[in-house]
Length: 109
Image 1 (cartoon, rainbow, N blue to C red):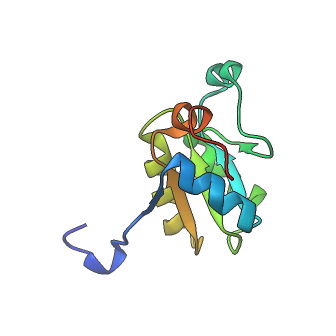
Image 2 (image 1 turned 90 degrees about the vertical axis):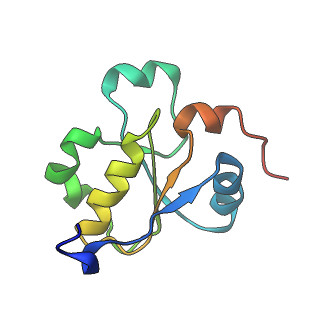
Image 3 (image 1 turned 90 degrees about the horizontal axis):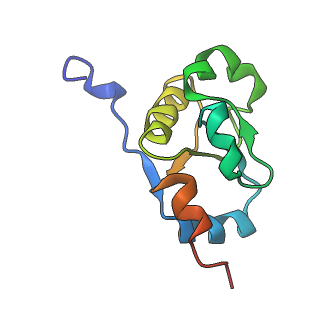
């Protein structure tokens, strides 16, 4: 990245509570980038499931102009957000703490 500083962009990272508030106000495209074996713990309603390793091949399933929030069980959502931004997605965020943080977050008021 040091050779290409123009390609470095600040990621938008949302707490689970902030995501809950945002989700009520906007129609967001939600992408679950966990592996299939992790789905047994549940998912967030309305999420599209695309494991991070398949994201490059399945970009055509997503709208690059829609606000997009990615989540996983840890750091992979940050990687996925970077992949999407590099592919031209204009508004990408990830949920800090992933799915585990979301299920424990307070519901929006």
